[in-house]
Image (cartoon, rainbow, N blue to C red; front, side, top):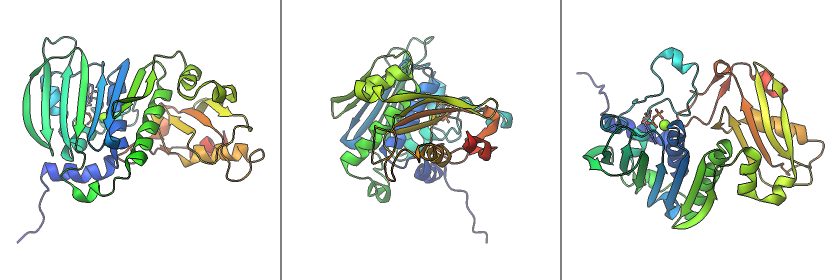
Length: 318
Ligand SMILES: Nc1ncnc2c1ncn2[C@@H]1O[C@H](COP(=O)(O)OP(=O)(O)O)[C@@H](O)[C@H]1O
Ligand SMILES: [Mg+2]
């Protein structure tokens, strides 16, 4: 008798959610990326209880028609790539088509969305990956996704959530990242109804950094511009050596606008500061690497926060 069975979709999604949805901040990361990919000019993010009770992302992007709104929660459902060639030149933040399916499999999700051409909006409600309700609703163009009771059906995962303060730290950090990478987009973040960030559209990175961190930090920033054409161009700011931090918390790295945790960039930065900063002291940095799409593989991990460089030695040489 054979023993192998194909797992039901919902279980497959919950397994994938283990990688995509590490904590509340990963949900906000995926939803904000979707809003950015949808061309939003304004993104509002509300969280309650460190994201445990509620996370909501409201955008004024392209929205979805009814059929897409339902399909968007299917595994491997994406409007962003179609062929294998597309995978080698990814211009959007998303492409795997699994974020919404993963998130919905471990929470209660309400989606309300409207395209500019439709008269009515669509509301979809999904609980633990099960589609419960689809109906017409009202809203202007854009998408609102509300995620409630994260990990309500996966007690083992729920236990791994940290204190509200820790989750809030990660939530604010991820929103700050995307706000820095997209100065032209207005962002607001509220926590239990209290405003944490309110950022009107800014003209460039410097103005956005000023909005977030204030004048004193901005004054110590030195512009960075370098790299090599066809390999990697680097732009952004680093702090003057007198600005001293004991953690890497004020280091923000981006590759092609994507938030990444990259050891090559962090190492290169520290190397550059080695002669001026003592051990255990870190510079502030906002560094944007621009790498030709075909030089980079972003399909390394479902969370998409790691990349592989085709020529990593060229990247570290700066
Ligand atoms: N905020 C949004 N606005 C418009 N479309 C969206 C939004 N969020 C998700 N979508 C649509 O749903 C699809 C699935 O989203 P997701 O599961 O995150 O996969 P991916 O972003 O990798 O395509 C997207 O490809 C997009 O077409
Ligand atoms: Mg996505």
